[in-house]
Length: 400
Image 1: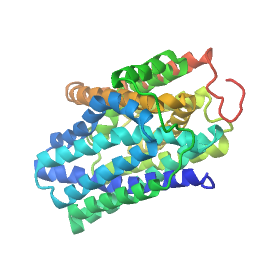
Image 2 (image 1 turned 60 degrees about the vertical axis):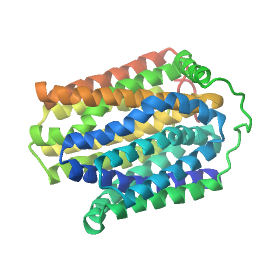
Image 3 (image 1 turned 180 degrees about the horizontal axis):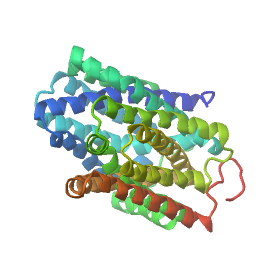
Image 4 (image 1 turned 45 degrees about the horizontal axis):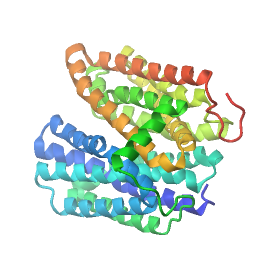
């Protein structure tokens, strides 16, 4: 993949940016907890990151399809660079920190659809799985390696140092993207009213059978993952009876699986985008959630979470590759923005209801419900593609 010069630049830009994001994520969570002294305060950062997606993605999608996508990505990086510098210098008030988190997410509303839309123009269709694997694996490894270092940096040098590293990562990403050339996107795109173009993107998502299936599966998965991911610490403490190192072991197990999954997928599977490998990982994660709610053995829970990481990573790679391959080029920005809205809205609903369910019925119920949503998502995807258009067309394979 790295012989493709354009892909190499995109990979490097996104990887460097991920390094900074890891430092920012850790420092932001610790800072808000120090300033507010409450878990609710930390949850406020998550809400501040989700709300811009719900408000702005319907308009951001058409703009991403109108404008040169590399310029959109560079502009987003420069905007976030300024915000990161501001946060490095001034981070004493919770309101200001929430405002910066909101603004950074605002920039991401433009960057993420643009980056997803660019990739299919840089590599052949049959190479999308390998290309997404490279980006995903670098991101996961960055989190595993750098998250502990970020915590150490905050303790030793303070929050300003961590936020400064994030600012430097955005500067490096913008410089790398400055020389990225993307073929295929026209310089002049016919323009209509933004709401008309936004509706066109939604119409493509609804009318295209495969894209519609992917959208439904995305939303069902978000209804599960929002609560189960955020409340894993509660499961560890109240159900498994571990804190500190035990919780770290569980998180690390997910990371191990997330790194191994795509690598095994590429080496062992001939056609990674057939329905079983796109939708099956959702079912695997659902079974893991059910197992976690049913066991009190920490080693068994850690082992199943390795499988959860495998399911998360392989599912993300095959799902995104298929979505990129099947989405028409002229509406990619709008389709990816719509998928972001579905994911974040489902995640927000899940976060809100998950806390209530955990308090009233127990954390085990949250994981039983989360597992059920994921199993329904897997079944919906497999059933809808069984007699429909082939999803395994990448790489020249016969229809599944």
